[in-house]
View 1 (cartoon, rainbow, N blue to C red):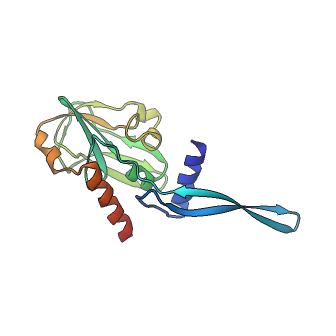
View 2 (spheres, rainbow, N blue to C red):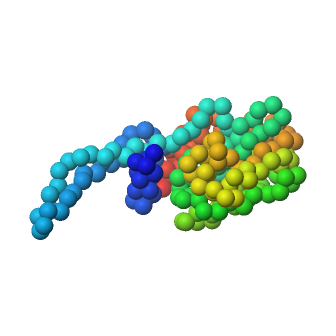
View 3 (tube, helix red, strand yellow):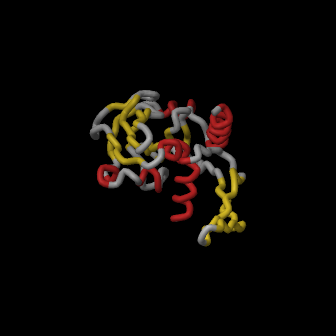
Length: 180
């Protein structure tokens, strides 16, 4: 886990991002011995990977939704949290608020930027992830599990049909990364 966090931080610092599972680069360790610099290969391969889960739908604004029965759980994708960097604050709506597909419902603030969060579906907020008040970093460490943002009672389940499946979202991210 520590290596993944280091690799992610290093990739962010070097502005490396890709959606494939191919190595982006390898680093060698260098040690200084007095005045002589000793370099030997101890490769640390950093794989650029995009965690996209089956069973979810994805918006082009990088939010995900998991629809189970009459409840839809919403969060930001691994891709989004990776680009944001370390999340330090999350602002979410109150329970009972209405959200509209494509409309903003909250804010995620990181050490790099502040970003609005859009709802991938329309409906009524029935629960917010109160853990994020004290531990906003859950958005980084567990974007699809503990880092979810809101739970919604969908008013228009057909909204899900306009969202991307995992394969389409992966392709979307690869194309977006190639354009940058």
